[in-house]
Length: 144
Image (cartoon, rainbow, N blue to C red):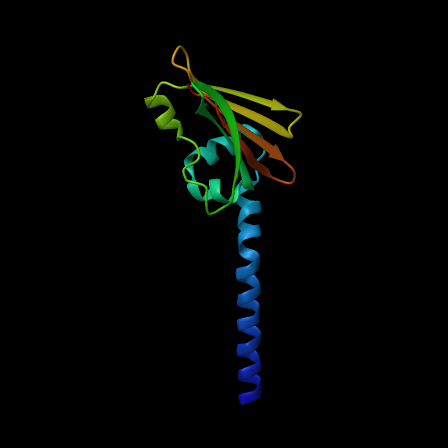
């Protein structure tokens, strides 16, 4: 009886450890899965946890930096611990800031989302790629 109880506890603990180890990929598959990009994007903008799980690391981030009185693009790769969330404004924040949105999806595997504000110099491009699920792969901030 005691041997069965101990082996049962060990098996339960082992299963719990395996489940914990498998949870993030399983959770990622569920959160990052979408019928189409528009469905994915709508949920991505509203859910920071989804942003964390559906981002490819290292995340490529391009910003314009001033060098010798000129703005030049600088690309860095950010590890999971270096990324600051939220990565993208919620849809309400986009409306509040009067930002325009343009989504271009290429053969259901690549998507480019451009948030911009006409006549202001604000333009940020988000690039997504779909392997098994959609993932954010690059952010380009061309704002001046």
